View 1 (cartoon, one colour):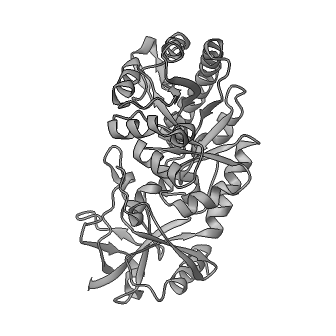
View 2 (cartoon, rainbow, N blue to C red; view 1 turned 45 degrees about the vertical axis):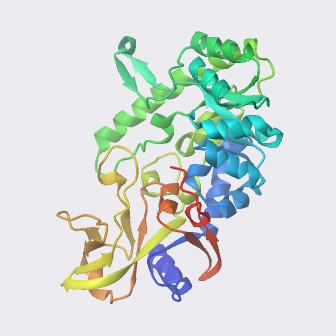
View 3 (cartoon, rainbow, N blue to C red; view 1 turned 135 degrees about the vertical axis):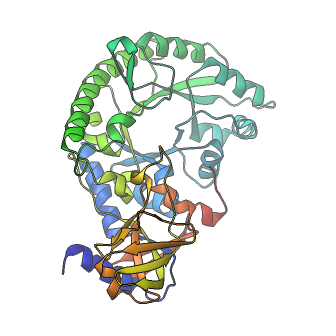
Length: 400
């Protein structure tokens, strides 16, 4: 029996009392992935990206482990909810236009001490001030650096379109805008190198493309390491009390941790290891989060149909954004249909061994987005479900 077949047998036994659709997290794999992230971080603390987890119980579990400290959140409403739930170090990774949230933040000493907001434009500071509604608490602020690689004088750009702050001078000017404005405190710099951390460099069946990605990423790492150090030096000249410099992502942990200018690493997807992390040469993890759909039809030889399953991930549309049939091994989508909202036909010889009601296990393309489809996660240890815990959705929250 292969390792994957053994996992399927465990998951089927653990969830035999549960009807699909159902979502699980294998805690042994989750903890092993956490240990691997800590190993790769080489002593620098890891700030957990909550959007990749979206379950308070599992956030608490990983933050209780040595090597992890703090949360990187994705909306202001989520940040405030987490702070009110007892988390005390939350970095909001994206600028916000939540007027009500800023009024709440600026009026509550506990929230203001726990939550740091992201800015990259003086207009955002003005927006926050206009939203205060009389709140006088000092708002903690982090600046985001554009990490993209620019070539040929800027005519070629590789990387996400995020912050407008690129050069050390631009970031230092923004730092001065923060420290000169009453009611704000500059505490951090964040730089997420998505073109390095979030792009696999070993694309199956695409050796030339993979080689080109590795070359691009090596060039980008060298350029960013130098520029990030210069940015940090320029900002510390404006605000010597800077508390942290955050960088990285699951796919670049060890590379970012090697930079002296970086004080902490961001990671989250590496805990669940969705399918987008199968194509990396720098690390490998264990799939920890899966979902199962039930077989409801057997249209013919080598074909079964499962209920639902059409859970695409965000990003540029493509086959890599779709969940992948994982267990039993050997199933694939019908290219004429793909995964559907209500039903999904699956092709392959393993279909002939599946009966009505059997579970087919899938892996989502991204990590936390799976939790937007399920109210609960069943936590599996060995071949038993040892706990059932709510996702954000299960607690009544869909922040985006």
